Amino acid sequence: MKKFFILSCILATLIISGCKVGGSFQQPVVNTPVAFTDANNADSSVLVKWFELFKDPALQSIIKTTLDSNRNLLLASSRVLEAEAQLDIIHLNQMPSFNYQLQAGGGTAGIDALKVGGGLNSAALKASGVLNWEIDLWGKLRGATASARAQMLATVENTNALKVSLVADVASLYFLLRDLDNRLLIAHRTVASRKENTRIITDRYEKGYISELDRFQAVQQEAQAAALIPNIERQIKQTENSLNLLMARSYGIVPRGTTNFNQMLPPNIPVGLPSQLLQRRPDIRASQKLLEAQFEKIGVAQAARYPSFSLTGILGFASPQLSSLLSNGFVANGFGGLVGPIFQFGQNKRKVDVERIRTQQSQLAFEQTVLASFADVNNALISTKTFEEEYAKRKIQVDAGTKALELSQARYNYGYTSYLEVLIQENNLFDAELQESVLMQQKLNSIVALYRALGGGWN
Image (cartoon, rainbow, N blue to C red):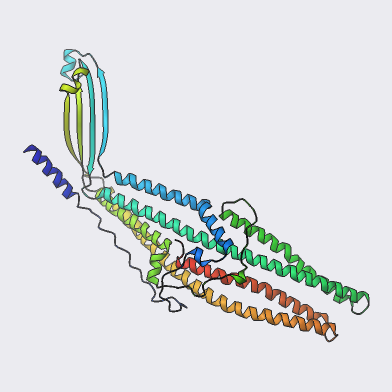
C-alpha cells in the first residue's frame, strides 16, 4: 500500500508538471507588400548557390578560401558550438542529479554532552548516493531550455548571415579589383598614345610647323594620364589587402580570372514573393529566433512566482564500524520539499513586466529587420535596372568618342582644325572609357547586392 501511494504521488507530480505557464510562442505576423517594385513578375524562390552564380574560377577560389579561413566566420562558428553546449547544460537541469557522499570520523563525548547532541562517543562511517530532482511544475526549466534553443538557432542564423555578407563582400571587392585593373590598362594605353602624340608634336614644333602652345598642351595631356597610374596602383594594392584580410592572409597578389566585361552571370535572377523572403534571409530568421528566445523568458519569470517542488533521496550505508558497514548499515531516505515566495514587495511581478517589455523590444527589432530587408530588395532591383540602362548609354558614348577622336586627329593633321579640338576629344574619350569600366563594376555589384538582399545562395 505504501509503495502504491508513493508511485501515485510521483505520477500525479509528472501530470502536474505539464502545466506550463507563459503560453506558446506564435510566429509573428508581418504585413508584406504584394510584390516588389520593378520585379519582373517572377514567382520563383529558388536561387542558385554562390559558386554556381559566379563562373570565374579565380573568384570561386577566393570565396572558398574565405569561407574556410576567415577569422570572423571561424569565431562565429565557435560561438555556435558554445551555444549548443550551453543548451545542453540548461536542458540537463530538467534531469535528476546524482551525487555521492563519503564521511569518516569519530569522537569522545561525556554523558551530559550526548544528551544535548554535543558529539558522539564512537566512530562514524557513512557512504551514500544522493538524488536531487526539481520537478518542473510550471515549466520554468522547460522555458529556459526553449529560450536557450532559440538563442542557439539565432546564433546559427547569424553565422549564415555572416556567410552571405562575406561572399558578397568578396565578390564586390573582386569586381572592384578587376575594374581597377581595366582602368590601369586604359591609363597605360592612353599614356602610350599621348606620349607618341607629344613626340610627333614636338618634332613638328622643332621644324616650325606649329606653335609651342600645341607642344605644351600635348605635354599636359600626357602628364594628366600618367598621374592617374600611381593613383590606380595604390587602389589596387589597397583592394588586394582587403581581399587578403577576408581570406585571413597578411598580404600577397590576389589571383585574377575573367575580366568584368566577360563575366557570365544569369541574365535574370528570380526575385520571389515577399513571404518567401521572410523564410530565406538568415538575418530575418535570426531576429525571429531572438524574439522567440525572449518570449520564453516571460514564462520563466512567471514560473518563478509559483512554488517549486523538489525530491531528494539518499541511499547508502552508515555504521560505527567498517566491518558492519555493508552488512547491517543500510540507509534509505526520501524527502519532498516545497519552496515558494510569500511576500517580496512585488519583485517577481516586476521581473515579469521587464521580460514583457524586452519582448516588445525584440518584436520591434524583428519588424525593423523585415522592413529593412524589403528596402534592400527594392533598392537592389532599382540598381540592377538603372545601372544596366546607364551602362548601355555609356557604351554608346565610348563608341562615338572613339570615332570622334579619329576624325579630329585627321582634321588636325590636314590643318582643318586646331589642336584644342583634339584635346577635347581625347579627354572626352578617356573619361568615357574610365566611366564605362566603373559602370560595369557597379552593374556587377548591383547583382551581388540583389543576391545579398534576397538572402539566397548562402547554403
